[in-house]
Length: 287
Image (cartoon, rainbow, N blue to C red; front, side, top):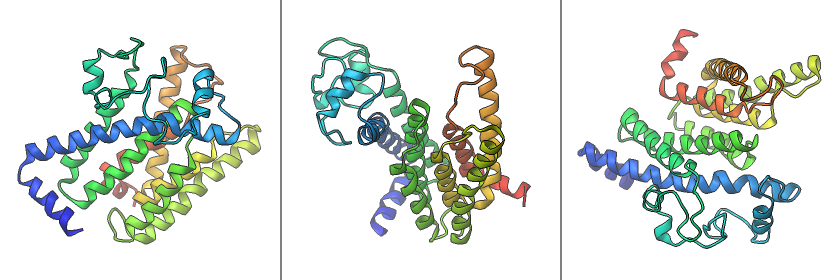
């Protein structure tokens, strides 16, 4: 990709410009991630058993629209009015409209600009960390997918195969060029990542009769292993288990959830994966 590398190298000569460009780019990607986070679970539910979320009337409306990531065009979920391009400028439109729909004045969730800003901030951090490099671009691909998976799992307890499985193959393809880890470690990471949680799932089920994980968690850890190598897996599992336990105990203590309430595990796996992406030297403490 010589032209892309030349463009990135040129931007590197102007750090402020580089930071501004990649931040705006990340914010725009965040706008698309909002679409994925909202629509992909509805698309899955429509294929399995119809639209059954809490937004029943809206789900029924979307079901009649042959919903996908591109169609129908963006609209207000309250008054169903199609939004113009000036209403869809990431972050800016939210601020301009005062967080309300221009047509019906219904409030717009703060989560939409928050995810856009998060995506921009993540892109900026990766750009500072990896510099102008192909590694920076590929790490953005990984993190954008993980942001979508994080919020989908948090909202719906789903980790869609449409994201996790391509992420596994992409990780091994990327590492066939030894970008993050050698291909052999990527392959072992994909296999062991799946097997680790698969074994834990069945052991837990054998002794308790309950499901401890969803199958999407197996595939997510497999994807992280494919990108970061099998050496990262013990730390990802440790970090995710520790953070999940602490946050879960905190939520129970403050009565946000009950003792037997289910919690998505994907967001904590993603936390562990991000830590290992940015601090791969932690592996040397174990090996």
